[in-house]
Image (cartoon, rainbow, N blue to C red; front, side, top):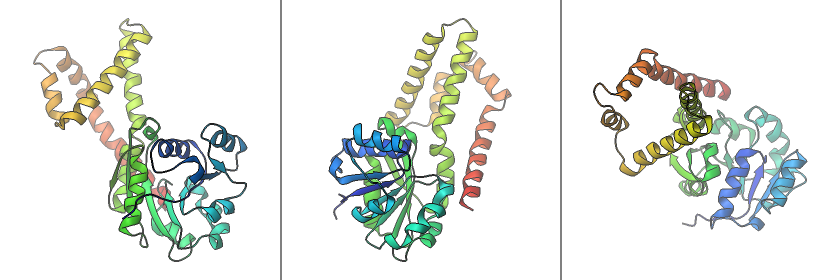
Length: 271
């Protein structure tokens, strides 16, 4: 089985498309000559041409004409308006990769001709630094080889896992929205440290390094986060005092509810 695509076309050239394109170009899966992008915003096409060195198209039809893999990277609410005028230009030779949050493969298959293969992916922006976390699921016409190819494309920017499509709304809530939760925590850590007199630049540097190190420890040891928390928490010590405040404030419960709210919103977008 070959997992090397031919021409990859992007319908939409926003931040996520740019991040994925950069990771593909840095791998052995695609060169600038095998990528083409379309976006209605001229400044985005200029970036793809001048910074990434890839081809751009004047129309979405041109992307479909030359591409084998087509990445849908526009806003989810624009799916029908974007795809219905292009329906006759799609064919079963196209493998459609959707990164549209909350948009099911079944819905996209209804907008496209019969036999077009669709794989839905929920990536996150951490692909920008090669540390992305994506999950994907194939539609009814997608083969195992199609899913394997898409997984390989997204592995150029980090981790990519295959899951059942019914779980992708939860994935959206966890890893899709997850970077924002992390940044929120870092903001809070810095704010707390500066309130106690630490210079803001020092607080930020220490907070970032601590979070990076904690994440690396989990990844490299494969340990249980609860067990590592217990190891760090000495009885009667500073960490115990801090965690007591977090527990009293219901921080863990708030995060659990946040995941639930994000998953619910993803399901709503899908409807």
